[in-house]
Length: 343
Image 1 (tube, helix red, strand yellow):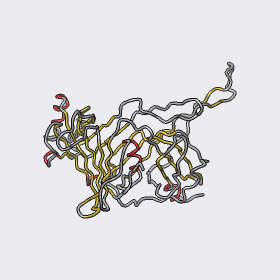
Image 2 (tube, rainbow, N blue to C red):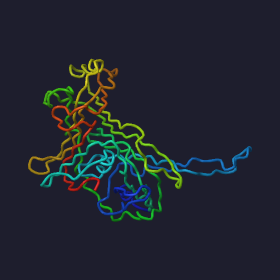
Image 3 (cartoon, rainbow, N blue to C red):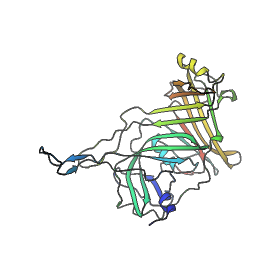
Image 4 (tube, rainbow, N blue to C red):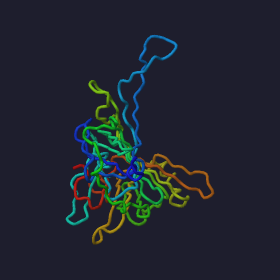
């Protein structure tokens, strides 16, 4: 029987190459640290084997295997390989820039994430459970216990405990877990979509937030296999920002009028950490050049809180302060990773 430490921590991912065939996730440098590893299950629709009408079933058969949908939750780390999942969802990463230890990664949301998927493996009860191919369907960033939480929706083709490629995770190594992003390092800016660049007066201070980035994937079967073919988008990607404020004030009460007037905004979220070198710090930044208010809520309470939901959409032109940015969201990271997340 494996130890508790082994059961919890031996989890790995690697960029996939051929849909339906596992890549070698059991190698050094593939380790990830989700807080909920192994949260997947097989689901095969049961078919009545006996088509003759009778009082009782005489057996069941199976045909196609449903898509394997599961979630992976992380306390976000600046250099953590959960960023591979984020880059897969965004559809692009590219070689980072920077001559020193600090490296800048820019993840632009492209129209299609076709051909982007991973192999996922988890060492569980002396068996290595492998999802040979899995697409990232959604990323959700939020705050939990003062840390930045990143949760990823996954859609896989299969689960096996006897994969021919990934047979062990004993060689897997993991990033340091002492460099986690904290909510105390987050700064939120919001101002008019056609207004000036952000200034201190544009800072808003939510008590909680959720940023959802989601692609609408299908889960189709085709002749020759019981498992799904690589999912493709069958709907437009959706980006949504929800902010909850601790109490109603002169700033938050204006969201209602803005919602009624269909006022448009731009916004960014910048989360920073410790110094890497000189004055350069670990950074995770989300830039949204065009925000439309979708919903506004004033819950009943002693001190009235406020909740506003924005939809991030494509901008016709880059607003002031966001040169070249028109996609619903662009993500900039500064960390010490020297190679492309999708290399």
